[in-house]
Length: 294
Image 1 (spheres, one colour):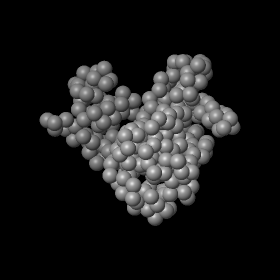
Image 2 (image 1 turned 180 degrees about the vertical axis):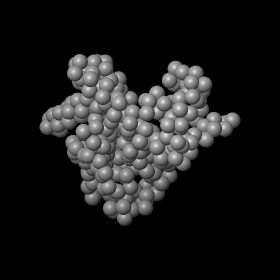
Image 3 (image 1 turned 135 degrees about the vertical axis):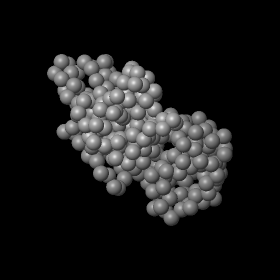
Image 4 (image 1 turned 90 degrees about the vertical axis):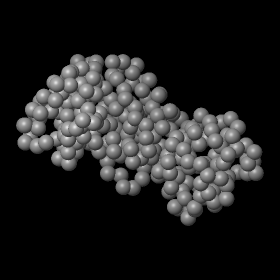
């Protein structure tokens, strides 16, 4: 099975047209169509539904997408292993991460790694837990940085515990308090992050039997913190997410307290590329030193 045929199929399935796939791969639409037709002939299956509006995977094609990605990942692994033998001079890494990790931990890790391996290219995909798991399941990401929660169906390296905190306006009556009662989320206007899909926030509410008074919903934590700073409500997040937000808002530990464990998830180290294995090692050493220095 030729990799060019597989790449053409994936590009067309993901982009929805032969034209878009051709632009991404530097081919003509006719060449993309021929490559996919050849793959369909090899497999004896129709992989795409073709229409005037574009293309989309058939049921069979959709089931094959993760396998095709895995096949191409193994090819990538072969070439990057060869590059490691030459000094890890080429390759690319795709990292899935919570936005909080992408803005705090990852820049330092990437900087250290790039000093030794400047030719490695990086793709960083930010998202909530469900999106990150999808990237791992679909073999789109080499590894992921997120907080632990059951079920964890991947290899897992724990790295650091972070407190869950309440973030309130500096004009809030509890601004001078030592902690924020979790029960008060039911009476203060609450700003919900991650479109209501933040697993750590949901766990705080579930554990304390709280039904928050949700007034605003945002995607990312910075947007929520900006609303808090304007005095529009309160929110809850982990310390890492609010690390660089210190003006005109107050960060308080929860009562009762709550923690989350951050770490790295990946599917199988045996099938990791040479670049991914090296980056994993750099990340663990960097973050272990950081935690030891706290």
